[in-house]
Image 1 (tube, one colour):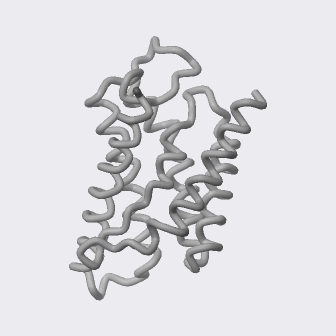
Image 2 (image 1 turned 90 degrees about the vertical axis):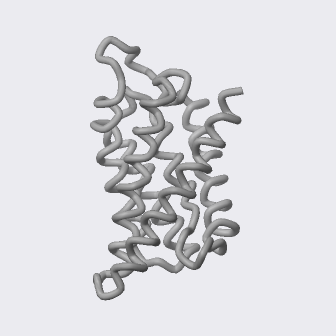
Length: 166
């Protein structure tokens, strides 16, 4: 149990540092920002307590907000994704699978993991950019930001997952 908490804490710190110091300063085509911090939410086991997922996600979002100067936007987006994660994971795994299943391409299958990660990242990016813009005046840029960031983030997560698998 303590090893799992230590592993989560190290991943937490690494993702906050990478997101805040590197990825937040990258904007591809003026609208797509990689948001690899969603990987943290994707890696919660099936039987992980829901309250603990919410606490971890809120703390991650709050840490990102502190370093990124986005007051409450990341915290709200991460908390929403953390709230939905156990229920979305249940839709993509088989009912008779292990109770402590770790979501990955190997355990879920490639296609199911792709859909699972794509849906989680899309929810996060939609919430994040909707709260950040807080209006639909410039809806083209809003849609391009959601689509571009989702695409770049999902590709990065799949690459990390493929490397982690080996």
